[in-house]
Length: 407
Image 1 (cartoon, rainbow, N blue to C red):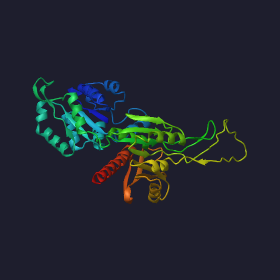
Image 2 (tube, rainbow, N blue to C red):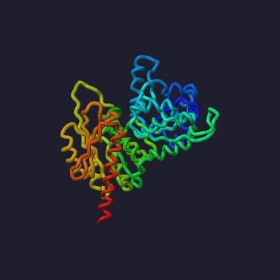
Image 3 (cartoon, rainbow, N blue to C red):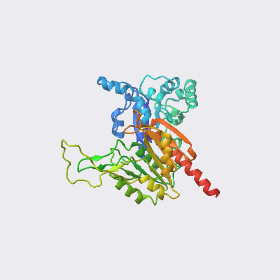
Image 4 (cartoon, helix red, strand yellow):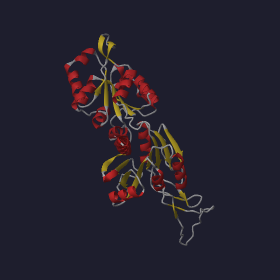
C-alpha cells in the first residue's frame, strides 16, 4: 500500500525510522510527514534517505510563489494519492489537535483531508497517557473510525516504568497489515488485461493512434494483482511504470495485440479489454518517408482486427469485460456493443468530459451488467474506478459460480 507516516514531536520520533523499514519490508511505499517538533528529535534527511522521497515538513513552501501555491494544496494531493495514514509517535498534543479538528500544520490538515484508514500509535509519559483528557481524545478518535495501537509498558525516557512506551516497529507494521488487509477475492483467477493505444504505421516515422494513456488498464492490473489474481497485461505504447507482480507483454500494433491476446487466452479465466485499439491501419506501409507536396494526400485504410468480437466468439465460460469510449448516447451504444461483442460486462465512459477519461488520472464510468442493470462510478481517481470495476467482476464471477453449483 501507499502509506503516509506522520511523525510527531516526541522522543520516540527516532524510532519511526525503524517503522519505515518495517513497512518497506512488507512491500509498502512510505511517504513521511513530520511536525515541526519532530524535527527537534530527528532530521528529515534520515527519512528522505530511507524512503527516497521528499519529506514534507511545512504547510507552506518557503520558495517561490508558484512553489508556495503548490504546497498550499499538497495535503489534498497526498490524501488522494495514499491509501493509509499512520501517525507514530502520536503525541498527546497531536491526539488533542486531531480530536478537536485543528488544522494548523501539514499533518493535522492532512488528517482532516484523509478518507482512508488512520492508524495511531501513541507514545508519551505514563501520566500523560493516563490523563482523562488524553483518554477522552482517544475515545473520540476511535468513535470517528481511527485505529489505535496501544503503547507498550516499560522503561520510558523520563526515567520511570509504565505505559506509554512506543510500540515495537514490527508490531505496528503487523497490526497495520491486519487492520488494512486487502481483499483477496480474485485469488485463483488468471486475468488477461489489455491497455493503452495501438500505433498503426503510415510510413517509417508516422502512425495513426489515439489519446489513450493506458492509466485505466494499468490501474486495473495493479488492483487485480493486489486482490490475488495472476495478471497478464498486454500493453500498447505508454509512458507508465509496469505494476508489481504483473506479467507485461508490450505491443505496438493492433495485429500484435491480437496475437498476444490469443496466445494468452487459453489460461485466462477473465479478460478485460480496456485498450483503445486503433480502428484502421495502412495495409501497405511505404518503406520511405512520405514527402509533403502541395497536392492533397489520400490513404486507403483497412479496418484493424476486432479483437473484442473475436474473443467474444471464443471465450467459452470465461468472463469478458469490454470497454466503450463514446461521445454521445453512452448507455444505448454501450449496450449495443455489449450484446454484439458477446461481453458479460461493459465499462462505458464519455471521452468529451473535461478532466476525465483519456490522458487524465480521473474517470467517470457506467458499468453495464447482465440484464441491462447499470452501476455508476465516479468521478474519481482511476485507481478507485478500477476497484469499483473489479468489485462488479468479483460479484459477477461469484454469482455465476453459484448458478453452476446449483445446476
